[in-house]
Length: 98
Image 1 (cartoon, rainbow, N blue to C red):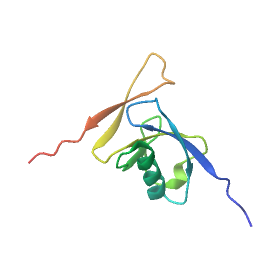
Image 2 (tube, rainbow, N blue to C red):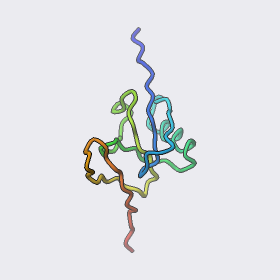
Image 3 (cartoon, rainbow, N blue to C red):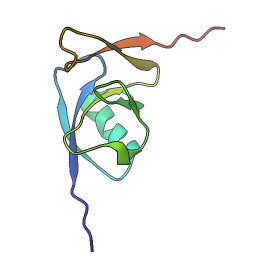
């Protein structure tokens, strides 16, 4: 029987790259979001890659990926830096118009 290697990722709160948390990737995206929420004491709803792409399937996550976790009302945007290998994630709150 083929046994898939357990993956781990480093999670940061969206908008920062300090106070990272290493977590194991479990069986579902919901489980990973719950673990992330527990680590950062937030209601984790979304995961983003270093390049700003949103993760919507657990199969897209690779071992040792760096991911950014955010609540539902935050979207991720990148700002180019002098060194394009080091992206900065900015936070933008989604506004609801009445």
